[in-house]
Length: 277
Image (cartoon, rainbow, N blue to C red; front, side, top):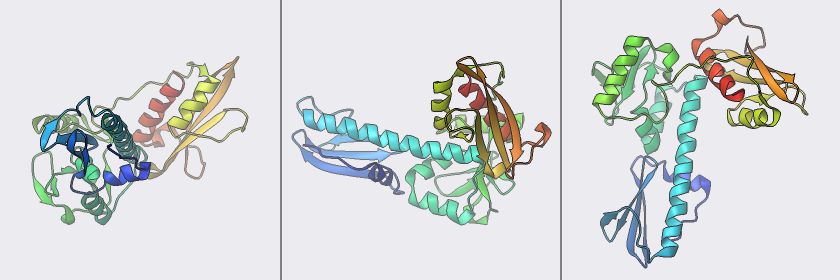
């Protein structure tokens, strides 16, 4: 029987080594090797690659199904954390960024497919740990200025977007989440949603309910890297809720729209459109 009953933490750890992780076990289907590469599980039986295990190995097939599901779940969580790092403006020092690439194959895979700011320069890091510009100029990663952060589409002009889109297409690299293709969304403040749905969606999107504990009348989210906080004030419409957006700095002082970073505007509007769809 194929036994792969690992904790969630172990699945995440299995994705961490810089080299692809593998598990080998003898089953009634033969010697099975499972290899994890960028969150996907490949199978070999007696040294031969295959898409699935034989139907005769029912228990091993079921265990494999669970294993694949949980590896994908852990991968999704790690990719989600990277997307949130882009949205919130998280910064890495050059030493921390290089250390994460050395220790995690998934981080290494993802950051090869994401445009990042290295100080005030845009680029990606290739499989040989070189900084690469859109014009294919290369430098050693250690020669670059910190801080390092994942670039957001709201910061890139149309020529840069086109150039990086061409770069990824030419090198056949798919992005781990919407970065260059990320769209702004208009938020209609007359839109309404059910009270219970608003609470569930707010939790999924990491908005905090800071109003009355028994109702949802105020939500906020802090964009730490951009020094701003978005606030949604919810208004009761019979059994529904509508909402209005406003912004403050991290100390709570109101901000005019012209003073709010474009990333905060785009991301808060996207979330508000989902919350009140």
